[in-house]
Length: 302
Image 1: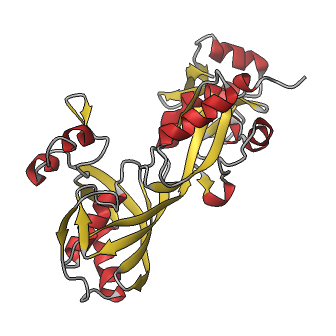
Image 2: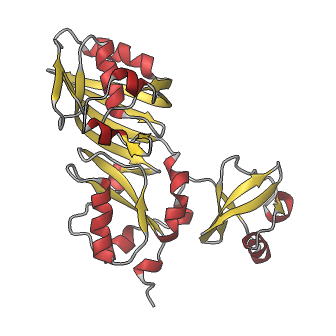
């Protein structure tokens, strides 16, 4: 007998189209499936497109673990013009010459942004101030650079390449940590090149272990197709796992007991330092954590 969809748990990698919010995607799926618990990993701006992992059922409980994984973006930069939103949807706030910029100069300047860096978030962002997102304030009045600088954040750029320059359009690809704003990096890179710029197109090519070629379009998506593509929790390779082979040990963990690793794990198995999935055969039954050096405990059941 086929299990009702509202009792399934897993991740559906959606290719979010341009012009739609991440919440719009969730609402469309909710309407199609009815009363199904769902969420998504890593909000995409309405003007952005690409990989949006949507979580169903118990998979919503591992959302924070998936957020920690790196993300890869491809971006087309429009040099010589910037806007209040730092993308093509905003109001133009400045223009500057760009003709002096060469691909080689851009590639050289990009090296300064590799590794751990500090970023000032865009005025139109979801960063909170007194319980409200910055974009709510920015819609009322322009936010000063001094005010935005108080929200300086540390992020990390793992890889960054500039592949082509055609006219004033510069192509960029980067892999970065959570919390990184591509629009901020574009602003800062263009400033370093002696011009200004904004995002003209943004595509998230990878997130939470899913690549663009693994995603599915919302067009024509039905329940049968969702069932075919839905990735179960125990197959989420971006989250470390520990296999518990004894039914008795599984029950002990579910009852809140701490277990010594030598008693419940295969010899030589190391315990991850970060929270991990506890897996029993073909099922993830909880999120575990390490206590001390050699004991494990259930942090949250699935």
